[in-house]
Image (tube, rainbow, N blue to C red):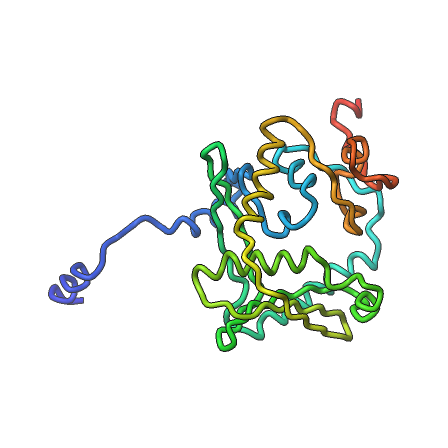
Length: 249
């Protein structure tokens, strides 16, 4: 490179710090991440059981599920990964976003979300849900689920600030069927704030929140803790507190 070319390069560029996202990625891969989960929520977590979110924010230790890992459960995990390849149908996919929520104590909570797909031609947000027996679940009234609707409406609330959104679609897929639902648009800004504030208030006041029982309880790793607290899980827990090292002596 000639002296003149070097001068032109220097005129148009300036060295800056490495982007934080790259640094965070490298630290995480090398076990150096000091990520703090406090005051940070995911959309999936927020639309689920509020008590479960409280336990996570309080740092309550997760329990050990008693059910053995079966071939069916392992296949379900892989099946979901296979079907999730449908997100490659759109160039705008796997988009991350953070939404900031001011709290009553002056602090700010962060709501993080990841959008499966966005069709820029029709301005449509698309969320993919992989499951089994889609048609049967629809017939039984198990689908669509309210938390899936809320999740999509949260994405709309968060992403609309940065890009046009006119349609919201949930796509349910199994190994033989694909069924799509259009979801009504709804601004959840206040719902998000109230939901997070309720958890943060319970945390600071050391109070509990009512459980929100659903079919997902059997996968929860707080079942014993929740069942021992009023207005919580009422079935037989299929998870148990993990033994501490001193208990094994």
